[in-house]
Length: 106
Image (cartoon, rainbow, N blue to C red; front, side):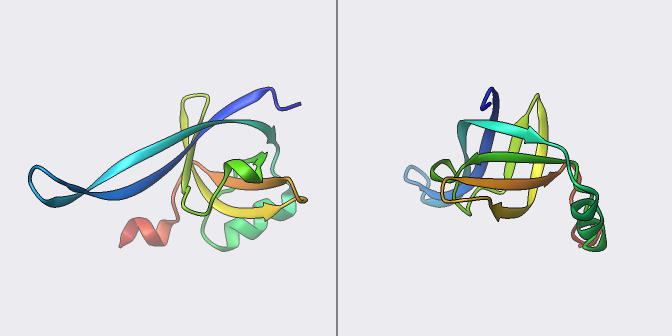
């Protein structure tokens, strides 16, 4: 296992020293992962919250922190909608390719 790769993404605000204003930069981290199917219970739970759970990515906990909000897999952007600690070493990231409808309207 651990034959797939995904890129974890987070944004960080820095101060542009030349112009002295804040700007966001994207931080990327390439990690190994296991791609899993979404179980029906997880699919319906996400749907009740307005999301469409599409894939679950299992990554090493040491590679992940809560600031990561997105990931890219096979050229497609996913939003991390839920995390679940599998054991002491691994964490599952339940992901959707679409954002919550309520968030899109705001």
